[in-house]
Length: 475
Image (cartoon, rainbow, N blue to C red; front, side, top):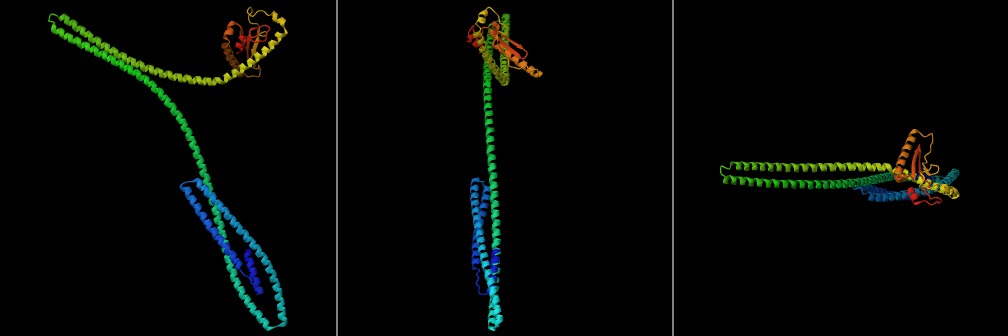
């Protein structure tokens, strides 16, 4: 709009003055250069569009993310360069508009001067009334009108060119905006592809973890299969032994049958050799043969029954072994569960044992002081072999640090008493020899557990050094 106003002002000045030469060649050259630059930018934008379409096709076809990212970065750099060029063109247009404003101001000033001169000339013409000068002025006015018509035509052409340039600039801005939107869409697609790639990697890691778990399960199954194969091998060995025994029994039956055949052959021979008077011997031989047959059949049946019974016993032993194995597994699982349940109790008992050891050390230190300060009392003590355990006040005692708070609920007291009962049982098991000898006593009163040792059991008389027996007791 500023360029249009400046051109219109120049044309008006030319119309009024008549002899002021105004040329639109500069504006035409600027518009021509801007059109050339716009064509170059249009070609670059078309190339960018083609590259973006190629990238979209490549992303849809192959999904090569790295090449797409690199090409998108190059396109973004090209777009930034085009933005810089467009901003430079706009700044040049702004500078040209400033120059045109300055020219317009100077031309308006010259126009005002020309108007003043025209008024003076008109006054001179009115005063002189010279017809020749009037004719010249009319000719000049006609020439000025012709020039103004030409300038109006040129101004219309310049306006059309300016509108075309503005339309081209709007189209370029729209194409640039579309290219930026496509670049943003491409970046979003690449971000989505990156997310999908991360999800795929995470799924692959999960599948690998599942495969490791399956491999472990497969190893366990293989180990179980080897165990079952070993058991089946043992059963196969037992079955082979049973078959071998059956074969031996069959061999025995074959031998018995051979003996029976020999007996029959001998009977036939005896029948051939004997006469009719030897019926008694024949009957005896027949009876013996029948007995032999019965014995052979009975022996064969007994051996078969023994083989069957042994096979049944082998199967029963295998089933018992399997049941025992299952029972052992159940017992092992229960034991591991019990161990897991007893670990915190053992830790608590260890802590309590540490506290008892600390109390014993404190009691040893406290008992060593009166032994050093009162030797007369030490002389009055009787021999430890001749006296039983003394009272709890005179002996070294360990009391549980559980507070006897009356505000504790009944459930808490029951749990504490049960814990103390377990602790007393464990201490009784540990100190069973000392309890049998009478060198230590264990008492439970309410929520207090007292372990009392005989005087001189831990420390000798008149000495603060722990004895060997006392050290073993403390351990």
